Every structure is written in C-alpha cells, then in structure tokens.
Length: 355
Image (cartoon, rainbow, N blue to C red; front, side):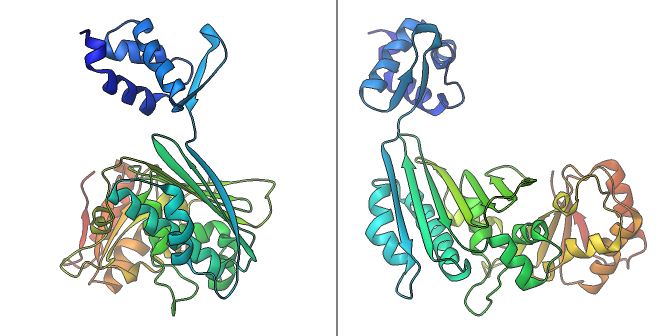
C-alpha cells in the first residue's frame, strides 16, 4: 500500500481545510505538503468533486476548486408579537444546521438566538431574513433585518457622538438601549465566539476575527440603506466551547462578565491623534461596569499627555476598585502612561498585561 493511500483521509482533510486559501493551486500545495506527486493528489481532488464536497471550474492549468455548499437555505420572518427566537431555532435553524458536534451546535444556538432576539426587539423593522450556507468544512449564517440600523439606533438612544462611536461602545460589552430586558452581553460574546463576526449597517462595517486582538471599523462614503446584516462563520469541527469564551472575560469566583478589553485604536478618527481629555473620556465611558479593564494600544503610535492623564491618573484615582491593565503599548505610549502614573497615589492599581 502506498503512502498516499495510507493517508488518504488526511490528504482529503488537508484539501478541504486549505482550498479556500488556494483555489487554483491546491493540488500543488497538497503535493508539496505531503511530498507526493500532483497526479496522486489529483485522485483525491476528483473523489471530492464526485462526492459533492468540492466544485471545480475551468480546464487543466486554469482549473479552480471551491467548497461545494451542502446546504443553502433562506427564510424570512415577519416581526410580530408571537415571533420567538427559541421556536425559530427549534423548528427551523437547528434542523437546517443538521448534525454537528455538541460544542459547535451550542455556539450556533447562542449566537443565533442572541442576534435574532436583538433584531426582533431593537431593529424597529418588520422583517428578519435568515440565510445559511453549510459546506463540509464550515457554516455561514446571515441575519438581516429591515430596521433603522443598529449603530444609528444606539447612537440616537444613548446620545453618542456618531455611529462609529456606537461601534466603539459595542466592543466594550454591556451596552444596551433596553436595560430592563437586556444585559448588553449578547453582541459582545457572540462576536468573540465565531471565527468571523461582521455587522454591516448603513455606511458602517464592524468586523471581529477570532484570535485577532483587533476589531475593525470601516466606513463607506456612499452608505447603503439602513438595514442591519449580521454575518457569522464557524468551522464545523472547532474545539471552542461557550465556557472557554465566557471564562476569558470573567474574574474571581462569581463567573460574571467582569473583564473587558478596550481597543483604544477605535477611538481614533482618520489621522487624528489621541491627545485630548474628551477622547480619553470616550475611551473610559462605561468601563466602571467591570472589575478588570485592559486598555489595548495595538496600532496606536502615540498619545498625548492630557489623554494619558485622564485615564491613568484621573480615572484610576476615581475608581481604585478597578484593576487597570495595559497591553501592546509601544515605548512612546508607555512613556506617557508612566508619566501619568507618576502623578498618581502610590497604591494606584495600573499594571501591564502579558503581550
């Protein structure tokens, strides 16, 4: 028995996991990886095509491969008093997703019900559409409503600076326009559970990729309609669990949502520098809701004295019960932080988290 036959399942698994990144040269990539001929790899490619796991287009040297959808499904729901996310999950979504490992199904259950509930309760729209596409490797879902737009609604109801400011507040967690019915944890934790999490609303695009310390905000010069689209993507065989994600943002023995990471970069607008106290006040807004706050300075090249002083002396002195940590600060940013701390009481709790 040849080496390639012995590892046939391993070869096909490699192809499926890497074909999206190498649609035109997956044969070469797999041959190089396993140290076999392209002809040997091609046998497995053709098998995956016959089984319906891959699509192929083009001829010979121009041939391209892509994951074939095993499921493509769409349904729209009218927002009425009787529309319940758990019933939609049980009757439709769970059945469409089909057989998945329990931990993966749990993540989908949490993410779908939280996002569907948000659209139902807060969008101000009349319809919610759900799209699902599942391949042998992963599943994508879109939850789209025709409401006023999530960022615009948050900005208006919380009297924030603009829609971008609304996104910044969402990244901290515990943000809700209806505290009587919602904790404000749903979007935050959902964004941390999936491989890719995206919200598109009007001219604002927010994205978080699992394992990436950064969140991204993009703005379009020609905004589309106000509707909100939430896109979720997850590998069908991830080892991730709900507990692992919740534990990352809890501290102590109460297992509450007590820790947050503030992406300071998102407080910057265009080429603006983080200099003023007003900017710093937006950065620390609502973080008093947490016991541990990590200010992440990834891609922040410099900060001003007043900005640093407002966070690391004024805010720290006002909230001695909060543990303040700093991560990914370059030497210049670190120097300004140390200068602000030098003017703080000796027992002030400002530390540095591991890089």
